[in-house]
Image (cartoon, rainbow, N blue to C red; front, side, top):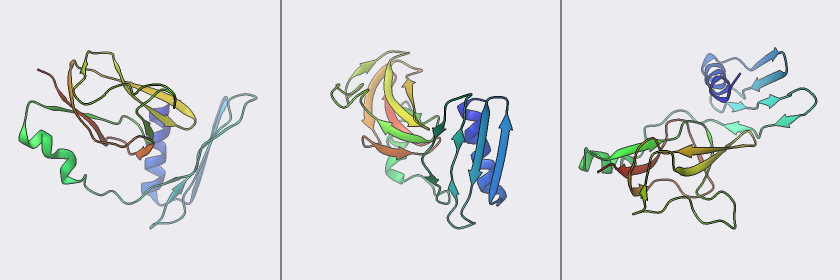
Length: 158
């Protein structure tokens, strides 16, 4: 079971209204608990073989439309591309506190360059660019929580 499957399971449980779901498969055990209809709280625990990895509790608010400012660059310039978060987690612009940021506004990037790191369930996932271009705007502050499909960067591919 990969991270995307776990995220889909969390979303499904949150929408279903169930208060608790437990799933056990081979070397993985997942428990998802929600705190009710208005304030669901999701908690996932993975137990790979002899190790225990506990994820922080995630509070999920009802889905709200993205702020208009996040989509303005795309409306103004249709050729700009918005890079969105593939997972829920914490957004980091640097690989470590003492390292420089992966990208800055105005930096030219190429396909495969690391744009940021998103921490999800104690795993640090490098988010790589799928296109070449120039960073026009960074839409998320360092160390901020991000949702699935939330806009992170605006890139000019020309």
